[in-house]
Length: 240
Image 1 (cartoon, rainbow, N blue to C red):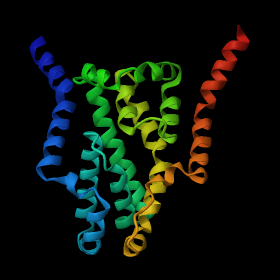
Image 2 (cartoon, rainbow, N blue to C red; image 1 turned 90 degrees about the vertical axis):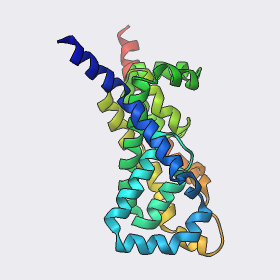
Image 3 (spheres, rainbow, N blue to C red; image 1 turned 30 degrees about the vertical axis):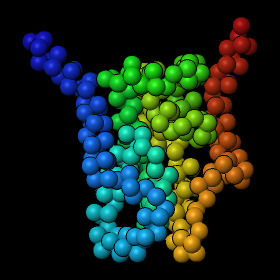
Image 4 (spheres, rainbow, N blue to C red; image 1 turned 90 degrees about the horizontal axis):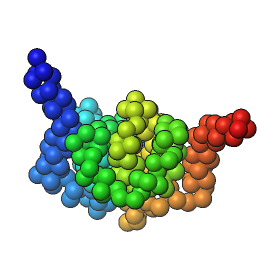
């Protein structure tokens, strides 16, 4: 009776790891890392536009799968993919596809961190876990929402730490989905006009997210996300 249940738990525990390994193999087997550059986007932009127009659904699915893999295996290049999403699909649908893909990819690495890869990823994160642990213990959803809105830490790190600290899956998915919308929209919007930039022989400004006119509203949203935590702390002090 216990043996089937034990096998099921074993499979569930290592399933995220298996998915990550398969994603990593696919990423390098197909040489996807070679395409995550502006040079490639400029070279094939006409073909990409033509392919999107002729095979829209297939292009969307291919884009989302590549994006999920890139986020899940924490390979640099998600920003260029986000810009490509805006270039191919426009700022509305581009944002939708990017946010869904990024959330799925982040959830895969989160589950891996919470199960099979916990110890390994904890060592990789190092002392940063201690710096984030207190915030997650107080109000995990709002704290993660703040970290998604304000880019204080690398995206891959914010993906794994909540898993190491046993955050609820539903809260993680919701905070990730909501929190990455503003930043994703900024880069998708940049991608929506990237054709003219590339045609002029220029490179899009990836540092746009750190410009005051962009960063200030994100910080403002992040502070709003922390309001429940601050209020809870203040209320507990007044009671004492």
